[in-house]
Length: 386
Image 1 (cartoon, helix red, strand yellow):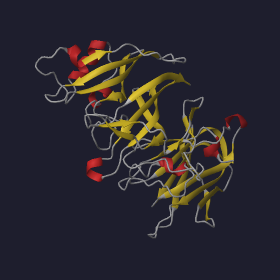
Image 2: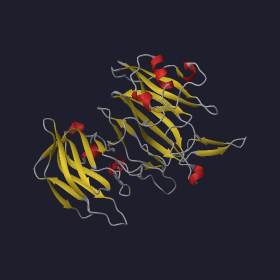
Image 3: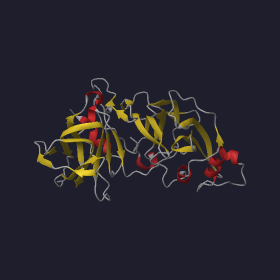
Image 4: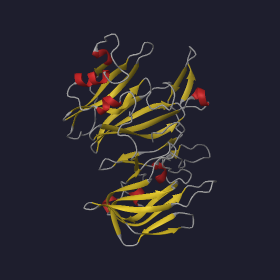
């Protein structure tokens, strides 16, 4: 069977060149999208993490089509993870299929839960791994969860709240707030009271059973002073056994964090806090603007799920489930109002496996008169969080 699309697999890449060449393109079943590593990546690789040991029989890599001649795709090494020996190289029989796919077949039977492919000159449209696995690990077809090894531990790396997030855990609310106001770029202005810049909001109601290490889910209202327009952020914080941990993603932000680039023309809202399989999930809607005035391109709106887990730090990742063009309307005073679209450009569904991994179905267009829904690329200009 197709081990990637029928199991709770995770695909990790060493890097990617930009938001339109991420590892998610390896497994989206679309020939027109592709993964390309960062040009500065000295040794690109793809790692496959399966939910249980599988008999790997065949690996297929489809090179990206291009009008410019590309170097022949080659796999320099195939490694499997062995508990007692670490990564061990596996001898592979290499061939080129009729459509140009690079086909790798183990010379001797190979069982693995983790595989790593080291590649040269890669630009790959699709990745397939075929083999056998025990029946209860087989699931309905879905796209594997994808990650990037080269990403920083937090998404605020180098920005306003990096030091605050990295400084966790904090023993008390007061320690949490004092660490925030002393973060680079914040600072007290005119001896403002601490409570004006950082204050705890009422606890949120969270459905489901929380893991033992999480004692409470909280929100904090943060203000970055500015003489003209102070910026306000609603931060997600969890109380764990060792103290308070702020998350790397905001729940709401007047700077509309994540816009690429642009100002806060739209809004950001969250809802439906719940625990599933030991991870905290919440729904978020927001707007991205690729710089309307500068590029003439319209913005996009998204509905997404944030997956947050405490693993040394409270790290959240965003998985967009709906994307489309926002509805614009003119108010009586002449200002533009942004609203979520009534019809999305594409949608997909999301489930959480027993080990807490995210599984997404392919992105389907909404369709219309004479145009049934079809699989489309899960990407949009200016949006990199997919």
